[in-house]
Image (cartoon, rainbow, N blue to C red; front, side):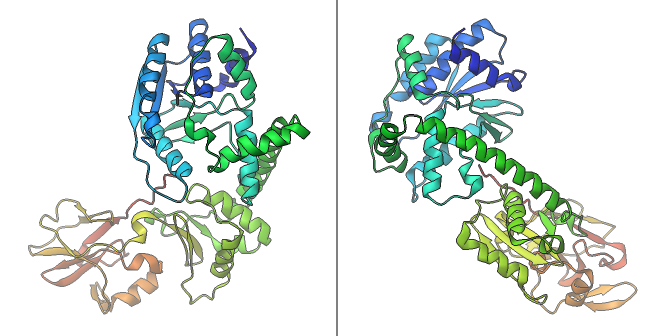
Length: 435
């Protein structure tokens, strides 16, 4: 067993019991070497079932033959290949949009517990560190490429981050491997290519170990970030008390414990909390947090971030995204109140209790509604919602049940059903798909 094989087997030991390993194959040098190494190891060791994924972006004519090249390569190694064609959405960064499309495709393939293996190496790590440093990234960004992270239902693993490109090239030449040279990799208009072809060769003339040292620095930074994450977990635990409105299904935190922290610890805790929800704000956008935190009790502050909004209500911070940022639909007829009703963009409702005959519909607040509440009689709905303390951002999408044009019940409001009827609302999900 050669050095690369031994290192690969050691690095993949935690995932030896995974249901399957999927290899991301571009057809280039790095992924071709990873594919060949794993195919060879599978002949010597009991590994999870191997399969291969090639994502075809369709961004350049030169790439059209690549799927067939990958088919020939996988056929020679007797490994199944799945070719996935994706559409890259136009955007400011073609590199980023292609990456998003690629990882979305990978995520759709992975089943529970399965592993995707990619072939990034030491120089990729160093390039990423320098690229993010030049963009002014914070510590979390400077940890660069993680060795593994969750991806969809499975996990993404990069087992060759400790290997140099020269090692991969030597292996490929020793085994007479054939690979694709992507013409776009020489285009220095792309930032990473500029670093790879212009900056790093100059650095290596003066500091031959520059890439190795920078990759090692990324590991040190990752360890430091791990310590900050532990502090964040401790700080967030004090702010994670349950709410009377957990049924809204929204991530939320108690504000006061965070207020008592230093500004740096506040930002650290919120970065840790937000990382699963949105792309994190840069230093210019943290003023939005200060405004949200310090606004008066009668204000309705909102901190708008890339993938959603943070609201403040009833002493808590609330994260809203997806359907929660869109107004609910129009009123909708409920022809069969005995069955649950799907509300466009607003979850579902169902009823408990026996209702008299009539024409039923679900509406939303317009203002001035009056609800008959036994035994208290007619009550202004706004006053009832104030007594209940329902966050303001939820009131406009709270389903209201009408029969023959008369308000009969407000969803989930304690004691708000007339004569024992209760309208139950399951709000829309607040799911994220961030990588």
